[in-house]
Image 1 (spheres, one colour):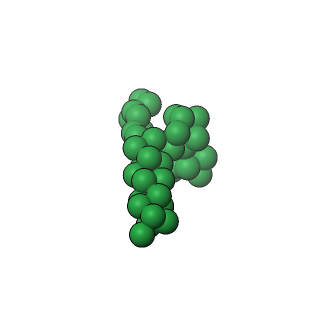
Image 2 (cartoon, rainbow, N blue to C red):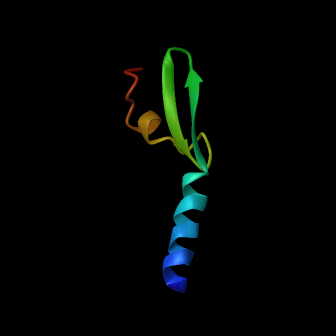
Amino acid sequence: MKKVILALAAVLTLAACGGYYKSGNCEYEFFLHKDISFSKIINSCGK
């Protein structure tokens, strides 16, 4: 039971470290820092 609680706490902590930001007409999702943005890395905005 203790492992389940620790795993859940880790997931909730990591989930709280993400967010969104808008740059021009594009909206990017980031994890931990806005420079770590998968949608920006794969150029999902077409720029």
